[in-house]
Length: 209
Image 1 (cartoon, rainbow, N blue to C red):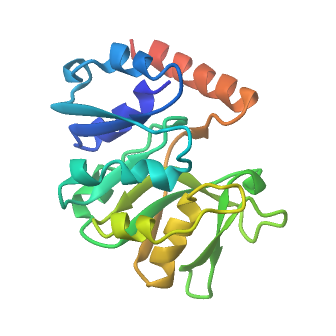
Image 2 (cartoon, rainbow, N blue to C red; image 1 turned 180 degrees about the vertical axis):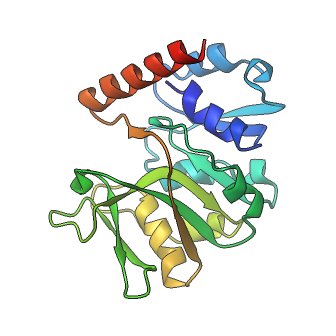
């Protein structure tokens, strides 16, 4: 499954990747990707997220030295898409950018709230009564200020450093932009969505042979 998120980055022209792993099976990722050459990567590094450190924002923080002062693209390992984000990556220079997708069950995700100008005024995490039918996908672009912003975050009620809080930091500063993802997207956060995602990619790979 992790192959597809990495391939999204490679297709966008990104060839230097840091993979943040955790848990007892972390070594499997090294066995799959090795030095990354097989997947079109020029450089691949690995970081291990300790069990007592939680949340997506915390995982992003592991990339501070890897980024070396540059902007970063982040994609979650359970998110797959065949959307082309190469123009977004090429034209990105400051602030942050998130990618949205219209879904039938937005209450499962971070949900953007739009103002009258069509700009995002807030992201609500898994709201019971969503104010839009869009999900914030697990694909983000950040400038290098992201690392200082993460260091200023406080843990949520569940003890994690939430990516929604990070994104709201950029929104509050007026530095957040968004695009609508074109094409397929899946967050394999449930058994049903994992099955559906595997089914989609299996069919697509057969068509492309």
